[in-house]
Every structure is written in structure tokens, then in C-alpha cells.
Image (tube, rainbow, N blue to C red; front, side, top):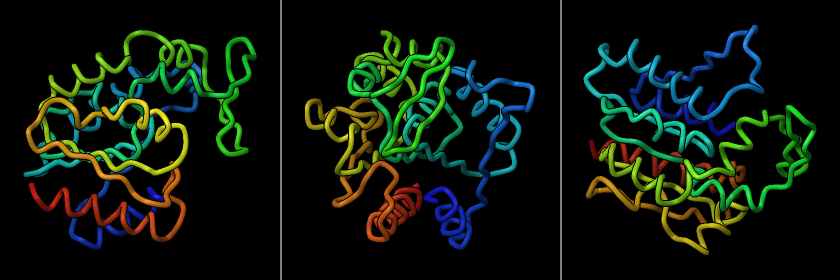
Length: 204
């Protein structure tokens, strides 16, 4: 819902909006990792970036580390919506059922299927806080983190207030949306999310 609303909102503000999913039907999503998704981002940017004077990126949840792993040097600015950060700390709180080659995660009563490769990636060392900060420092593009005020992401934030804004570009910042969950499902939270995103892009 937030992606659909954001696409309409930003298009009305004069932005071309590209939402993409490059996973073919013969590709089993259970084999995907953040590296798979980052390669998708890189492929789309390589195809589309030259058509525009400015390119802006948005990533929600796991879209945060996906964008950062892609290292989009062509981006004028990036807005990350309640992005996953310090993945081992998050996975320590994740409830999931191990079914061998796949795992079932429960997000508010909705079961999500992920492959074991993504589980192992999230619980490993490659996306600990220090490694995330290094990715942000390497990219050095303006990043705004818009965080929810409840849920696992926020609990980790309370324990460690770092996120992707904590290293890299001097304009990096973070805002907290009151009364919001991970998907910004209330009208008030959604409106603030879209306003924060639009205002951030307008700066650049």
C-alpha cells in the first residue's frame, strides 16, 4: 500500500516513478539474497539512469540494505523507510520456523517465505552494524532514514540508535514517525512518510 500511494504521490509532484521486480518465473525466490536484489537495483539503474538528470532511490525494510549494497553512485539522494540495519540484531528477535530449505517468518500474523540463504545472510557478520556503517561511508550519498515508532526495527533502534544515516554524507539525517508501524499503515503515518520523502528529494 505504501509503495502504491508513494508512486501516485510522487508522480503527481512531477517525478517519474519506477517500481521493479526482475525475478523471472523460473527463478525461485527462495534462492535470493540481498546480493541478488542489489544486482537487480544495479541493473535497473544501468538501464534507466542516463535518461534523467537526477535519480532518487527509496528502500523499505530490507530495501535499505539492498540499496546500500548496490552502492548507487548515480543517486542524488536516498530515502530509506524503516530500513533494516544491524541484521543480526534484528534476526535475534525474528520468530521463524525452520523448514529445511525455507523458513517461515511471521509478520503480524502474515507468514512470509524466505530461503535459508537469506536467513544465514541476515544472521551472519556481513550486515552487522559496523559493516552497514562501512557501506554507508563508502557510498557517501545523502541518506534520510524515516523510522517507525514501534516494532522490531524500533526496539533495535532503542538499543542502538545508529542506522544508515550514521556514516557517510554530512547531510544524512533520521526522523521518527510517531504512532507508526513498520509499514506506516495509519493515514497519519503514511502522510508524514510521504511528506518527509518529498521534502528530502526536493533538497537535492
